[in-house]
Image 1 (tube, rainbow, N blue to C red):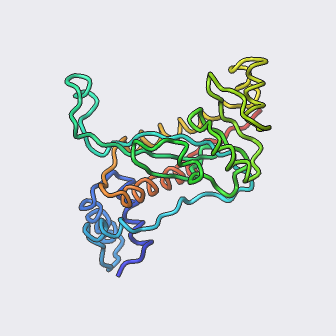
Image 2 (cartoon, rainbow, N blue to C red):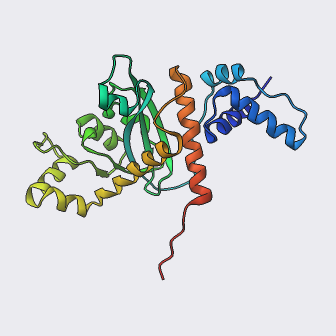
Image 3 (cartoon, rainbow, N blue to C red):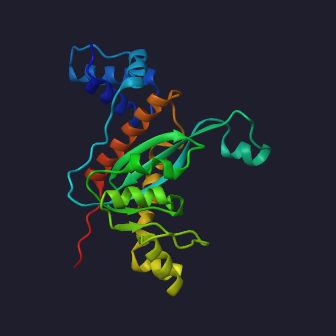
Length: 251
């Protein structure tokens, strides 16, 4: 009865105002009433069930060049607040999800992935790739042979991943070996300045924007619905960026 676009719009309104599904239904009904639109509104049960199988994609601007910056953060499903944990410790009933994100250096979210909290960051590398990617920037958690092999197969030559402190030279020529050698000749700090590694800080800002806008919790309890919830929120952040990003002009 309702299109996927209609369900996505309702869920977007709910995410924008941080509303539960029942309140989302009431909010949309009020909007339609004020606009004089005589249409039925999907009830909260329909929104919940359709959200489980809704395929929401990240809406991005068309670009020819993307320097992809990736990282992950934790989102709480249920459990005590930080004050209670600091004061009395935590109970066994605590659960988190890991939110992996890939952004362009201008702050636009390009790719997302949602996993359990015990999944290592490097296992989601391929899921975060985007077709326009020309550079890959990440922290030391992605310093492994599989990541470099996948990037090499894609023809990506601009890879900025700091080797581990005790890194050793791998067999055969590789970009990582060049990084290890350069760090040995200069220093880790100097190497980071040379390759502009500090552009990775943009992804930290993006995760701060996400948690500052929507909090550090997920409302959904099922994996598929959680992915829908996160993707809808990321689309909102991209839209916020489009309509409210400051433009700087050098004078």
